[in-house]
Length: 465
Image (tube, rainbow, N blue to C red; front, side, top):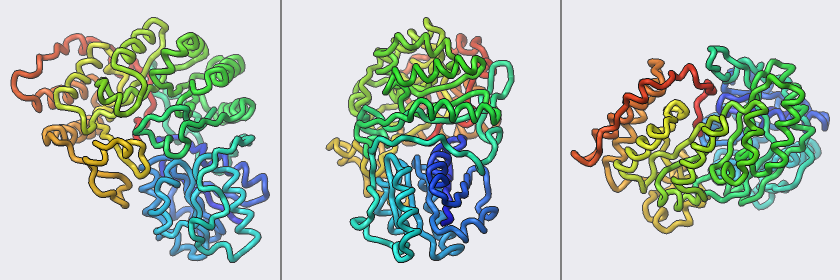
């Protein structure tokens, strides 16, 4: 049985979503080829694809799903008889569309056992390679089983130094490894793609597996580890024990994590541990500074909580990197200016990746946002190819500002401009979009005196979706 696992995009990371199932499938004796199309050419793996009995696409996010959907016809031309599978967060929520493109099996949640089951089924019954109706798929579409994980097998993937790196203040580029200590999330934020699959559940990856995975990546050259958990403090005791053990074994190793505002405040006693064990920065899904918007999204934090968390980080000596959903149907031009003003006043402009100023709310199939009547009223018909419900802001100035900001950020980044300089361009666009006299001029002199981006550690692949 020949299996090809395919990743199209995962934020510049070596994909855990290929390495983990590869270990499971190889343990069963299957021949597994891993193909990361963010770095490898489709044509370069044509021979493996043509010989594959099973080709499984990993779909952890929206961009990855759109890229994968454009490849299915090419795969079929190479190998008309292969069985196509899609797995990961975006597989079950786009099931109807994926099946219409010839995908035979859909796996979400804890997918490793499902992939092994599928491989066994295909190996035992050649007839089962035909497309089965969704109702006849033996493997669960969404599994929340508590698995005993295996150490990911990264053999055959591109070397770590070909992926995103951490730019350090000294100018050093640190090779980055990637692992996961947990999956899913305890929370039900309405805009989050995790919720339709995990629905408030989260599952840990056993500590010994995480530690061995990091050891092997350090041996392969990793100097920094990104923990890809949706929220590292869903299980704070589990998380803290892992970083303490890693620091004891690799005191020079740095890392970054993602933690929501609510957990940063609730578990603030653990923040010094993060600082002392090598945490370079914490990515935090702030999303908005408008309390009404935060309530609609069910973020369970307020503007005041965000400000408190920023000040807490400053006292502790940690760096927060906020992520934003800057453009929503409920923000005004003036509200957008207020978002920028607060970031400037808190002196965290250098902590924000410029693309965050242009992020627009994405409403995919099965989004919990669709439970809100006003959202149902404002969205258009579902776009199967774009994989979202389109929406138009009631104030055309907001949609125009979004496009202007997106264009400006893309052009400025292409020119290599720094974060403060890009922020100034965005501020000017937002100010000009306001009605005359509604915005007081923001004094940017303090920002210009701030350290340049070169003093802020950051991943060379910007956060996107």
